Figure 1 (cartoon, one colour):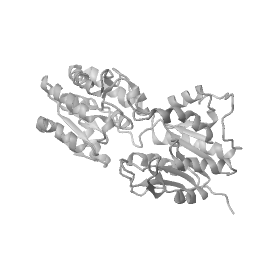
Figure 2: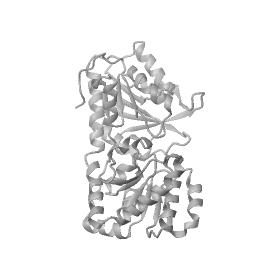
Figure 3: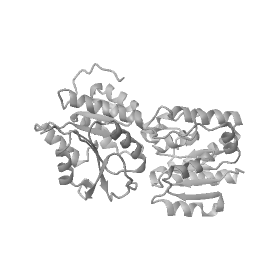
Figure 4: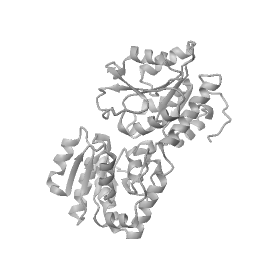
Length: 387
């Protein structure tokens, strides 16, 4: 019987923005790539059901005292046919505990965790436990190189680490001088992302109202959908046609058309993958200048270089509204040349961040785990640096 060559990746959901990464993986992996993802998870983004070069399997969720958990019999059957399994690396995942138990009791199938260390929506206890919990896995995929460097300082082994540095499957061309002049003169401000509470687009609307009251002329356009949509629409109603809503936009050509004419993206807090889309289109980002208030992908943002920041609100998030309005006015006060420099710097910083590079790093780790004797704990004195 031939050994399995299946790479099994288990994810809570399969949002559209992961499709490019899984496609790049499937195009490079010598066997089959199976993406098993949750179905009907409350609060999760819609699953992407379009065909791809990987096999997609929906796994139901079941309630438990530790929160919703993926159906174990389904996961167990899929893992039994895999050469290597990539699982969410959260301590509250019972599925990960079970797969690790099988591995520690003599199972030969490597188990790799896919996890961010800490984001703006993280709970403090899991974040405290994660670096120690992650030592139990054969390998670890973190979101950014900065997180990987932090884990090295905690004496994790570089041989067992890699990172994503989430990127784009398709990088738009840099904006032309005509594009820059047009969007700076007439372009709206854009909120780009799911309309969920953590993003605080309500603060963006309130800051925009203060900006308009002070004489600002731009419009605000919200691209996306989510549970906060009714609240945001109600908040924007007094501003009339100065605020627009497009709903969810998944078609790349349609999204390009909206963003090509925009002046900047406004994302007050918890900005994550949408920063790649914004920067890929050469759009400066107005956001809280404290990276701890955002997701790991925010590491590419720099105040004054490719974005405009407002200080972290000292007395609660509502106190950010004047700072948001001030950043919008600061954008209007920039010269054409300064705006062009910031916009082009935004495009340049994400150009090397591609789904192909993500796939190469992840597959390098997976192949190395399959090609050498496995150990489930880190060496006490790791001597390797990150490449």
